[in-house]
Image: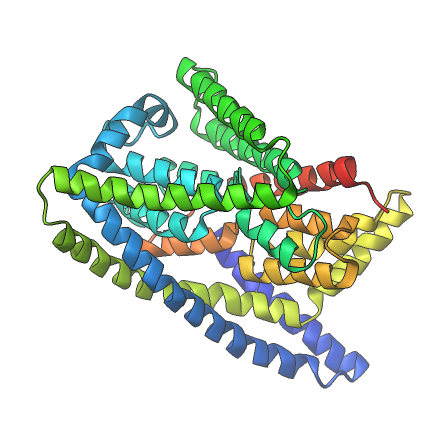
Length: 412
C-alpha cells in the first residue's frame, strides 16, 4: 500500500510542479519534457528487464541443477542454525534457506547480476509456503530488508566507475563504504527483528557476527600493503573465482548424483525467461514515475531548499551536492548511478562530493525497485511494514555515508 501512495505521489508532485511552471512562469518546456520522460523511462525499463533475461536464465538454470542434485538442501541444512532463527516460518532444511544465503552472499560481494536471479528464486520458494498469497510474509520482509540494506564487502562496480573517471585511488572508498553498509544492515535487521520479536542475542547470531568479523578482518589483512592497482586486481580475481567456483560446484554436484545436468539446466532456464517477462510491468511502473518526478525539476528544488536550510543552521552544506544520489538510490539504481557520475563530472571523483556520491551509491540497495520486482514476481500486493524497514535501513546508510565521508575525506 505504501508503494502505491509513493507511486501516485511521484506522478502528482511532478505534474503539479509542471503546471505551476506553465501557469505562473510561462514555462512551455517542462510538461513536454515530463511526457517525453515517461516514454523514455518506459523504454529503459523494458530494455533493462529484457537485458536481465540472459542472467536470469543462466542462474535459474544453475540453481535448478543445485536443487535437483540436493546441494541446495545440504546448504540449507548447514546454515539452518542461523537462518532458522532469522526465518522461523521456513521449515527446517527448506531450499529457500539455501537460496537466501546465496543471494545475500552475492550482494555482499557486489555481484548484482548473480544476486537478482537467486533472490527471485528465493521469493518463489518463500511464496510456496506463504499462507496468504497476496500478502508479504514475515520471512519475505526479513529477506527483502537484508537485500535493501545492501551490505557490501567488495564494491567492484563503484571502484570501476571511479577508475574510469580518473580517480587517483579508486579503492579509497573501500573501508568507509563497508562501514556504511554495516550500519544500514544492522539497522534494517534490528528494525525487522523488533517487528517480528526476534532475539538477536542468541548464541547462533553471536557466532555468525563473529565469523563475519573474522572474514572482514582476513580480507583487510590480505589487501593491506597492496597498491591501488593490485587491490583492484585482487578484488576482480576474487569475484571471478567465486562466481565460476559456484557454477562448477553446482555442476559437479549434479554429476555426482548422476543427473542429466544439461536437461536440469534447461528446465530451470525456461523458468528464468518467464520470470523476466513477468517483471516488465513493475519496472515500467516505477521508472515512469521516477522519470516524471525528475523531469519536473523536483529533485533540483529539493536540493536547493536543503542547502539553504543546512546553511541557515550553521552546518557545512557540501554534502547537499550529493543528495540527489541518496534520494534517487531507493527508487532506481540506474538513476542514482547517473547522478553519481554527474557528481564525478562536476566536482571530480577525488573531491569530497565525488567520494560521498560513491559511498551513497553503495550505501544501500534500490528499495522500491527491489520491492516492486521481488514482490511483483510472486504476485504480492500487500507489503505490510516492509517499506518502513527498508526506508529506515536506507536512512541509516545515508546518514552513515555522510558521517564517514566527513571523517575519512573531510569537506574541502
